[in-house]
Image (cartoon, rainbow, N blue to C red; front, side, top):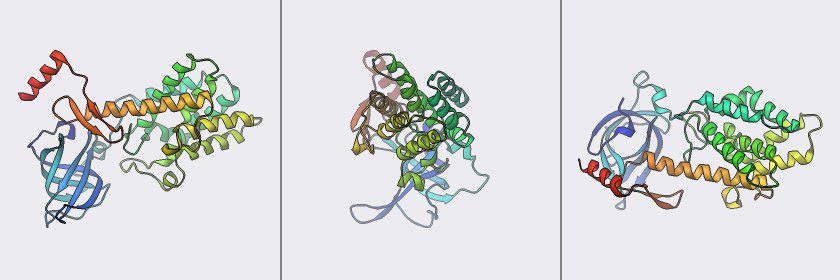
Length: 326
């Protein structure tokens, strides 16, 4: 199989893809065309069908399709101009080749989180963590393979696990840097802050919002998971339950970002900052590593609302320019 990460301008491509997005659009002159987003395990690429004819057979989003087209460059990004499409037949493709996944060891990531749970000293929080994350097979299994987002950051198999561990490590570091921080509250909510994404997002290859994800969202569902688990633990302090739930409900930071509450405790604020930092830096990382642009400027990133530049300078930049010319 020829993967997206290896595509080059002017190449003729005949390959199978997972169609992640399909839109019927119109040009300024009123002509209908198809705008697609195609995916394999190495990334995704925009594709356009300018001529709708008998060579473009019927297909839908989240179906596997066989594409015949040419790789072009448009606004510094690679894009496929498609001439022919048909649905892929079973046996023509391996689904594993179309599911992006973390390049880290999933078992090792989960084990590191499990070991961090063991460092929690508050007996009520420790029991809560065991009941939700360790003993609940449905949640623990889904947690290890779930994506962290539909498409913004860590949107691949194992992405939730990778993001959660990163946020937890940042919070653990910050817990020792500032006074008045309850480490047990901070670490436990860092580990659980996105736990309800196992219910918010559907499994791969679809990786889309479920009905509960659309109607409730992972912040509300995450708080519910904590509330229900705490209520099953005899003597669990009501105030402690409220503090834990608050961090989950407030970790998006602001109302305009979907947070039902703004952070009102130091733990909730640190969690918000750590979550935001890891997500945004991952967007930078994915833009830089997945960029197919020439030169140092990657281009404008809508979610980050800025143009991104590679950190090349001096001899390294000259070397890259020389390699591009060759």
